[in-house]
Image (cartoon, rainbow, N blue to C red):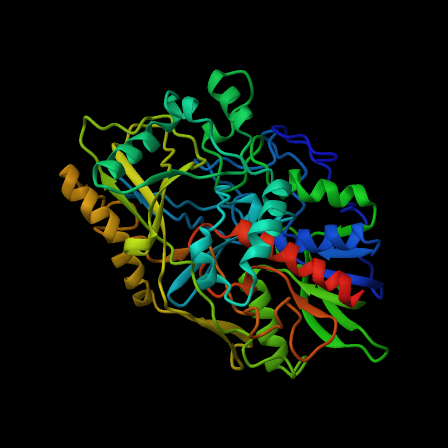
Length: 517
């Protein structure tokens, strides 16, 4: 990719210094810089259209006091969390002890956004969720696609847009011969052995990590990042986040500017056409340092499933965009996420050194409705534990609604709605425990709690394709308004979702450029 330095900290990003000015007029405003927003910005710029992106988080291009841009998972600091004074780690306990700690309030990289019944983890910064995910870049099995996006032509997606997305994202798979011998994937080999002994297929899962770099990490010839446990709060070297793929290509067009630390609060039709957008410029402490009003001919909502849904629901309910579809805010799901750990026997150690980048999974989707990542527990000590993040066919869906008394958007989700996901995950792990004579760990999510049913990494839906929008993401009721992110996908992708979000954005923007510009 032009301007990218894979395996190093350097990356070319668009002109972040040219922040948007009050009263500016732009042809296209993209709200958010994650997968959907980056696809839209790149393809629009390549078509000769000037684009301005606004991003609520920071640019993440300046090293901290330790010389690194991102904080390590095992020692979170102010860079770790979005405007929190205490960490909220997905694993709240270890060996019976709580592990969260106090941190300074800062516009950090990971947002643990708390709703009633669920915490939604989201990336904050230029690059969005790509900054904080594990990089598992999975294309759904074709036979499952009809249930994911029923109004989309599967042939187009699998012949054109999934390959386009995978190529642009730099997707690759671990080298099996290296996997079989390296210390850092002993945990995954144990996961494979135990899955296969219970009759479950173990599959290698593609990822956007630079696998050559990881092999060099293991050889001790380059600075470590996956092998230093870096994942939750950014990865300093080896991961091909959007900072190393789409964003350098966006920069190379010369047609895109990005304003970090800008939050959109209002979008209303402008009297002369287009839309008037109100922005808050933020300090790194989260205070509003300036208010700006800009005009955009067209606006793309790419703030992620939660960000886009909350904004659209607010705009409809408060009368700013009253003609938005009544479907806005509906069809939200957690991709069936649920976590658990298992306690292995002493003769099945999982390794003190664990790569933070998962590379394999257990596929019981057809029979039991679950696909389980064999996930790392990179604690630096031997834990004799196998850890999993499951994606399930959980049918439950939440809805975002405007609360006029608090003037905020609520999500109606109940923790009890995770029970189908737990039951589907149990279709794998009850059997493995029975075969191996092992038990569930009860010390990872609180006191005597087996299931991590309190969170999702994979928020999806809220502006569902073909319901809140037409079949290409045009928002019903308003010409020139589009949704182009995970909000379009109705709650589940059967696997990690970002390749599908990227491929769908590639499909939609190609059609929009051809017909609307």
